[in-house]
View 1: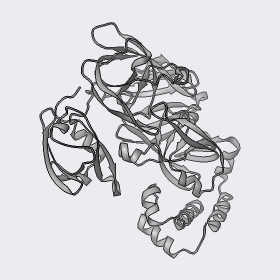
View 2 (view 1 turned 135 degrees about the horizontal axis):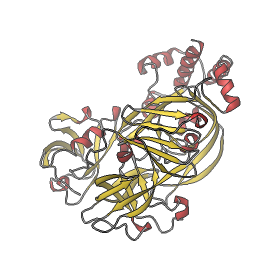
View 3 (view 1 turned 90 degrees about the horizontal axis):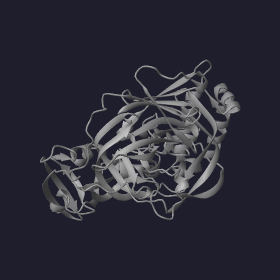
View 4 (view 1 turned 135 degrees about the vertical axis):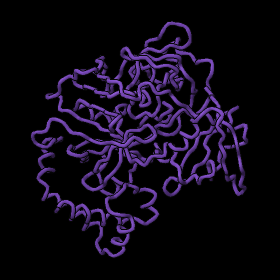
Length: 458
């Protein structure tokens, strides 16, 4: 009870330092108390930030759980050999809820492909007066743009019964990832492999649950799991798969196992002469990453094999790496395997023993879907309810209907666009070939009606 009271008080004091517009734009962290109630409390309160910091310090004296965890860096409740963490699955991203530095309830992407844990909202650590150790460059999603982040030590992260203290994280200088705009999801960071490597990690996509096992007490699963080796490099798992492009023999590829990627497969075409583009591809923004969109081609490969499992007609992103990139930095990988394939299994990663276990689930035989409209959308506005066209594929139904970059979608098949999520609209655009799509759009100050039919682009 004391802890809940102190945390509520702490949240009120934070709100004091923020204007309403700042709250809406930057601190969208799903606080446990309602937004309007917090505003009322903020208007009435006379406390300042110094008193907030004093309260936070006093509160720490009442938390024996936290002080014990500080001494050992990472703490499971006594006698527990595993921790179960529920997650949400939005737009093919795994999202977990955490409490950041005992104050902020945030949402982070669970990312086996990220070397470090990252906070995308620097204003949060600025507000908490976190001491940054140094500023250093990062490589952007195009593998050549230089971005910047700060190193912060001593961060506390709580997920269900797991409590981590003295965690080092990266704090982005700006919100380069822009998840809300490009993916339509409300997240404030990435939970990286620097934390996950301490456990045996089980991801059950079907029931939306992650289990972190103490490696000392983990026993290899029996049942129908298939075991395969993985290479752990810089805390990240790499596996071997086999691709078949056309009628030739399959090609062995090394892939980064990336639960932070909402794609099925990405192949770097210039890392192996046999990784050529298929006959039918579209040039497009094939994803989003650190610093913006990733440009390349979208197509399908006839077959992809993994640990004895086989997938047909797999939607695949094709990207050519910059010749300036040191391939050893990427561990000489040929591409990435993401959630659209991984989610067809229950996945267990044993970081300590370098093993991977896979168990197919009921989504295993689902077809790989892709957009049939030819338009890429970005989202903004209150409640992420404003959808603007970011890119139009040449020769697609969207282009033939006259849609342009910058057009704002107001209604979709007679319903207000604000009723949809970005993921919901994307699924509509993956519908039955020949299905009619009716849009009302706004182009500058002009309102237009547009109709087109969906068709296969790849």
